[in-house]
Image (cartoon, rainbow, N blue to C red; front, top):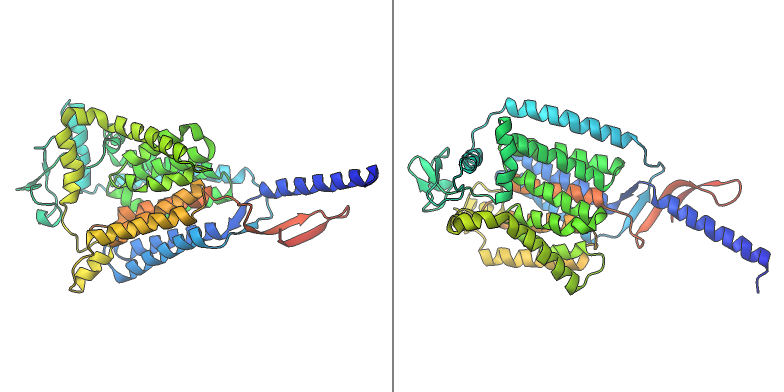
Length: 437
C-alpha cells in the first residue's frame, strides 16, 4: 500500500494533469477539419470568380476540388494543433468593427448597383401585393418579364407575352424577411442584414480568432457581394442554417425552431433532414423523430396562412414552377457540360442516387456535432447542385457558407491526434513543450 505522503503526491500530479488539460482545452485550435473547410470555401470562391457562377470547365474543376476538401473534412484523420495563445478581446473588437464597416459599405454598394433582375421584380411585386391585402402566390399573377427569350428561363405555361405568370416563387419566410427592406427603400437591404447576422452567428459559434476568420471568409467569399447585388434569397437560407448550428451548440432548447426555419427557407432544404441526425449528441430514433416533428411544425406554421389563402397558388409557384423549369445549358454543372459536348444531361434518377449515397456517407463518417452537420450539408448540396439541371452562383454560395459555419463550430475531439504549441510545466522549473499531447 502507498503511504499517505505518496498518495498526496499522486493526487497533486493528477490535479496538475487535469489542470493542464483544462488549460489546453481553452486554447484556440487549428485542425485538419478546419483547414479542409477553409480550403473548400476558397475553392468555391475561385470557381465563382471564373465566370460568375456560370458554366466553365475550370470552375467545375474547382467545385470538384471543394467537394474533395469537404469529403476529407468528414473522412480524414482527426488532427489538431493547440495554438500558443489564449482567447482575447481582440477578436470581439475586430468582429464588431468589421460588421459595422461591412453594413455601411454594403448599403453604399447596393445604392450604386441598382440591378434589375427577375428575382427582385418577384420580391417587390410580392411585397406590394401583401401590403395591399392581395395574395402574393395567386395563380394568375403576371410580373414584368426582364429575360429574353422567356422560354430559356421559364417552363411551359409560365412565360406570357411581356410577362411571367407565376406567384412568388420562394417560400413565405423569404417574403416576410424582405418586407422591412422594401420599406427601407430596397429589398436587398434585408438580405444585407441577413448576411451580417449570419457572420455574427458564425463568430458566436467560436468567439475567438477562429470565429473571426470564418466570419471573414463568409463575408468576403466572392459570391457574397454578387448574391446581394442580384437579390437572391440564399442569405435567408444561410442565416437559418447558422442559427441551427448555433442553437445546437449553445441553445439546444431552441434547436427545433431554428431547424424548422431552415427547412422553411428554400425548397431544397428538406433534403438535409437526414443530416439533422448529426445534431443529436447521442442518436436515438425517438429523439430524432421528435426533433423532426417539432421542426416540421415550425415549417408548417410559416406556410399555413398562405396555404389557407390559396393552396393551389402556393403549390404552383413553389413546386410546379421548379419542376417544369427548363434545363439551363449555362449552369455550373456536369449536366450542362455534357450537353455542351453533345451528350444528354444526367438523368434525374442518377442524381437522386448520388444524393442518397452522399447522405449515407455523411451519416456514416461525419462527426456527430454542429460542425459535422454543417459540412455534411455543404457536401450533400454540392453533390446535388453539380449534377443538376440548374446550378448557379447563389447555389454554391450556400455551400460555401455551410463550410464557413462548419469551420467556426469545429471543436477538438478527444480521439483526435493533438499537437501542442504551448509551455507545459513538467516540473517546478517548467519546460517548453512542443509535440503530441
